[in-house]
Amino acid sequence: MNSRKFLLKITDKWPVKVLSVIAALVLSVFHRVNTLETRFFSAPLRIVSDSKLVPAGSYAHTVRISVRGEANDIGSILEDDIEAFIDLDRYKSEGSYKIPVQTRKKGSALGVEPLEISVVPMEINVALEEKISRKISVSPVFRGNVAQGYELTSQFVNPTAVTADGPRGAMEALYEFYTGVIDLDGRYEDFSVMVNIINDNPLIIIHGNRMLECRGAIRRIPRQSQRYESADRSENE
Image 1: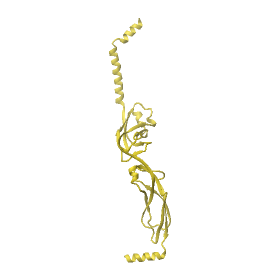
Image 2 (image 1 turned 120 degrees about the vertical axis):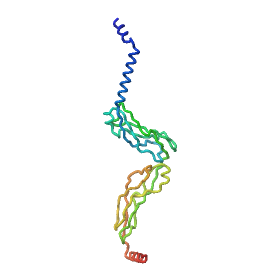
Image 3 (image 1 turned 30 degrees about the vertical axis):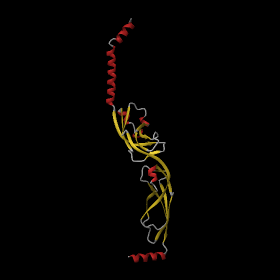
Image 4 (image 1 turned 30 degrees about the horizontal axis):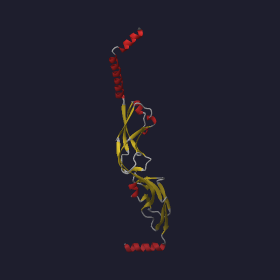
């Protein structure tokens, strides 16, 4: 009898009770949503690809990330813990594509709930071309003159060429790299300097060390040649 009364008491006006429970849940969720905070930061856009295609034109290298969650939780997330990337593996032929920007949680962002992650822009336009790799020669760039009465008799760089890869169009138009400027002013003896290889195209990647050695041999001009040189200067004057 008691069990029957208890059952009748529970089921009495059950629609109202169900609606009350639903309303309580909605209010709880609404309150929780309203207490969440949002944090913004910029993140580098990574390229993920095992395919033979690479970007062939300019594209956004950074994106804007927003994370929404409990204040204490999102405050502890490091900017490096949210990774933004585009995946090129699904694309098999050259062309222009709208590629969605994806995000991945790492480190302190793992296990944070609730956590809403948004990215702007959501997709980017990228032109893709076949990746080509080949050896490119390197030429030194000199500035100024050696000391009077001396001459640069020989020079060479080591290595003489480096391996680089990039999109087909850019690689086909590339014939050589140049070094940073090497100053010759006032030099009167052999020299060896380490110098950068200059690469102004961010789509082209140089493999290995970006520094190389440049050596030069400087010799005194024989006196007879110096007299001829002085005479030539006098006639020109």
